[in-house]
Image 1 (cartoon, rainbow, N blue to C red):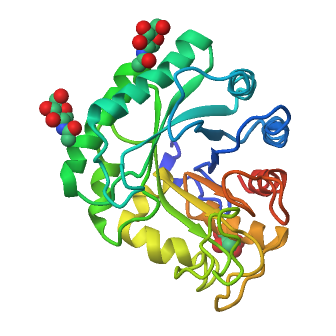
Image 2: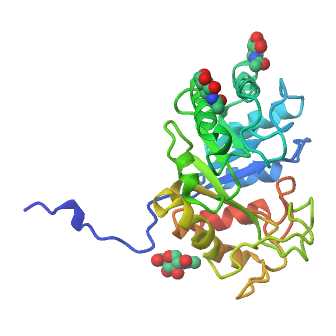
Image 3: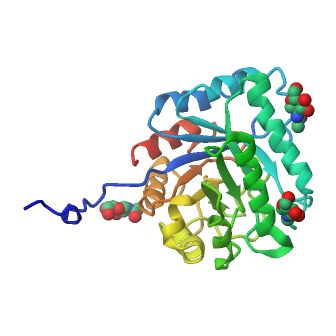
Length: 306
Ligand SMILES: *[C@@H]1O[C@H](CO)[C@@H](O)[C@H](O)[C@H]1NC(C)=O
Ligand SMILES: *[C@@H]1O[C@H](CO)[C@@H](O)[C@H](O)[C@H]1NC(C)=O
Ligand SMILES: *[C@@H]1O[C@H](CO)[C@@H](O)[C@H](O)[C@H]1NC(C)=O
């Protein structure tokens, strides 16, 4: 008798989903500045690096003399997907979906022009300040934006929404489920460090601000409490988790001290939960060389788990 497929054993620890990297690379590419990024990409050919390019809160009409060679070089790695940055808000995210539709589609077309006019391989679009609820006709807006990306770049274009949080409601699921819809939704973007030790603009964590630090109720708790309960466990493979300000400690219970060892434990919890993409960094999105978690340390730790 043929052995039915459903009797194949489940092997604990074997991960079926792969967690990719989602790296917002908002560092200007002076010669050499992106070398540590390229080294990490080259050292980990089995990790997919989705890298967000953002020269000017969106594209410049043409890549300048630094962006042109550096984006070409980075995009030439087979494990890199370059994503062009666009955003939906005129007031830094307070109101979502209020940039005129014609302006955001213009930016999408300018990104496409980088590929046709300058031969830079842009694989898709990262939509920042994406909505978490249906206010302001956001469902139609995001559906239109996504159609426009697919019409411009082709149906295989990668689409990432970045709401940054879930909004504390299941309304965010509407955006995950659009068709065509996003490949990834960055529904958790937060700081590890306490606001007392935050670095401000360098790690993009507000000094003295009030926020919940990452995993302050234990390893895996941030995703379990603030992500899974709203997006639903079936959407975790389409979810990205971005953690910056990974230095000092998170002041939690238990208190977690930032180190390359604790990074591996926190990342294991991310990978175990089938999260689609992640990024941890000591600083923010403009410096990738600070300890304990520079870009090389992060890539080593993630690659060891996927
Ligand atoms: C894209 O490039 C073409 C050819 O250079 C140009 O005519 C067009 O205006 C550009 N589109 C945008 C949106 O900049
Ligand atoms: C979406 O696109 C349709 C068709 O072009 C247009 O009528 C509608 O106003 C757009 N809605 C939004 C919110 O952008
Ligand atoms: C991840 O899953 C493995 C296998 O089930 C388990 O041994 C490990 O403790 C888990 N790690 C975390 C941090 O959740």
